[in-house]
Length: 76
Image 1: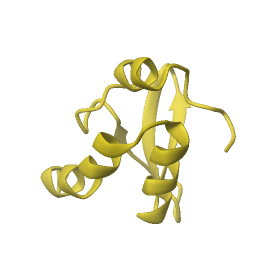
Image 2: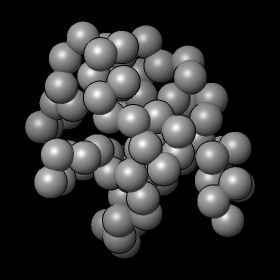
Image 3: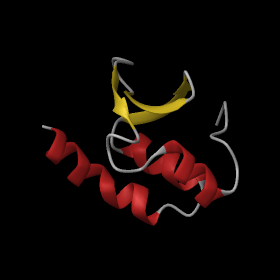
Image 4: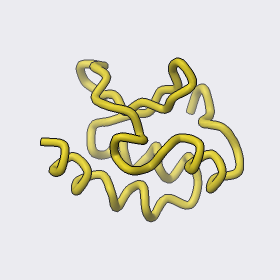
């Protein structure tokens, strides 16, 4: 399951130019991001169940924030 999730979401993470791009791409696939306890976590948009951290997917939150130049926005 983990490998499938990484395959489904990797393009969204790789091609996003900013947080808004990433958030929209994930939302279109039924997911959203949440910062909790200093980590960025992927959650299911329908059940709101936490799936995993972005680090687990190969995209640590610190690297995303460095790449996008700002922290994950609280509300978009």
